[in-house]
Image (cartoon, rainbow, N blue to C red; front, top):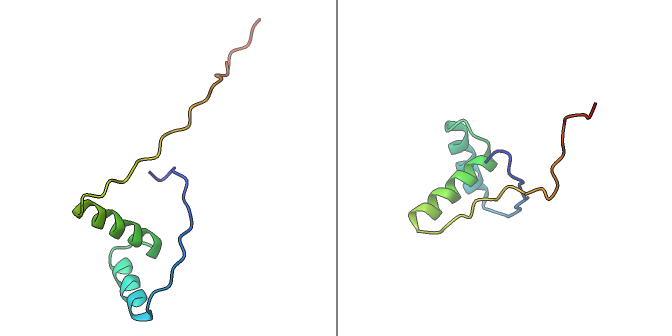
Length: 69
């Protein structure tokens, strides 16, 4: 999923929650953003919330890489 497009999420939390998040992310060797993503996925999994997987875009035209002689 590393190649999927991402979007920005901005929100406010209490400083003590941010510090706890930073501490957990550091323990897991993750960025804060990745830790939030992991936590959301875990919560959704425990609560039967489906997460749709992005689909690969399809091309209507295919290009040939061979040349005519």
